[in-house]
Length: 606
Image (cartoon, rainbow, N blue to C red; front, top):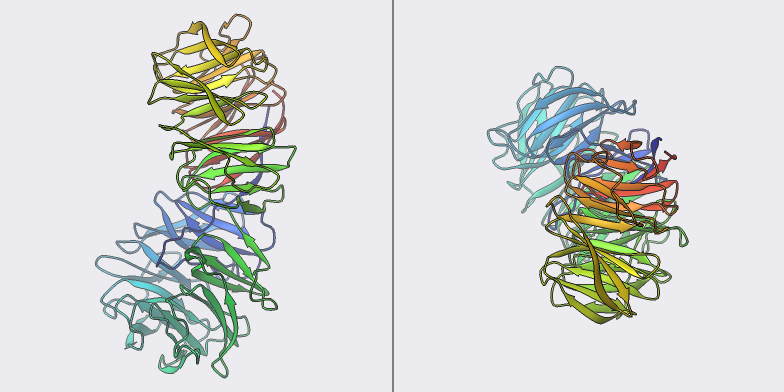
């Protein structure tokens, strides 16, 4: 058996209110970069489904930038380390790694010949370093110019070379070289300088700050040329400026602001050309932007990546949607041709086959969704709000169909005719739900953790925290205990009857046990194991395979008819726990994890 990665639906950029988000473009204009958690994401600017992920950082990443040659990427993390790695090979081999400053790196810029790199950030003894890419040797000293964290930096793309910096000390720094040395400071901003950038021609550079000011400077001497303003505001934006990006011809600049707008400015006459009003909600604040050829991108506080349309400024031409918080659950419906994923912030994303994501509409869950399942034509979800919701898949719009409980539902099993069996660990209850109403509650002498309904609708399996599995007879919405399967005194994380009713799979701690339904005889022994706690299990529709996910980053595919045969997808979500798996069809498995990615796998039979 083999498993091959079919597609990755990538995370959105990490976003924080009041903090800028950095997007960097490929010199060839085909891909762009951003970071989240320990990963660097390389997104195709045209195809949503094409997303490459670099995962070799040990700590959370903060920014990444292409070398002008396009052959390497330099990425930085929260500890002040940078890694320089290859872009031409699939494995992204590491070329060099250097410790640069003592705190989080905020921005990175390359020299136009791809030989020098300048990094800036929080630091301890220093806030910046400029060095040779292949040796790490310093090329001058940028320290002494600023007295606080340096947020942004850029390298003049033409000779004579210069470096400009923007800091939280409310100044713009200017440096000459190489070797680089401090020349002077500009103090026009009255708040943090969040973004800075040289025009491709090198004639000017521009700085945007948290006071809404946009200041244009001479590229060679670093002196103020003009402050660019919106006549109606007496400054560029009414909110802080968090991103700016030049057009390829150096004639225009795109800015992104916390006032929920993006703007295009004509540099020649310093005039406002286009305003993109992005909405009125808090999540419509704009935290970054990128101008790549004909594509103008911006990042919202929601994490969305917007493709701005100059011909229709009121509406983006398309939007990349997804998750930027850890994904906790996944479900799939081949009949609707959709995949559904849920994250710790309560967001549910519906994924089309082309990788285009959309959000469920209306007001739904507001926090962690640990479990969900497609039941008929509805998505049934449970959350830490002590409630269960039923959302139609045709409309993908939250309604009033929900059940509020006295405690948190752990997991549930679904049957036919509106039947759900819900496990409540805290209250020691097993609850029967029929047609979205609680019809019976059973008090049990153990802590239920999971449940599954047999396809015959006459039997229910309930897992317990102490490791035992209880088999109940289901008769007219009541439960009568039939037998008990003694476990290994480890919590039953998940359990599931196979779709054909012939098997019962039980996940307990690191092991999966499979029992024949006819006599509940175990056939797996010690063959199906993980290196860390299992998080979920899922049967294929034909009952031939069972997939399991784990905190060990791996996915295991097992076959009850051939217990010794196995397929291990190692590092399915590299350096990230795999939180849930679901089968889209008999040949396609979907997995999600703490890397905020959805991955699709082609599975061949065992």
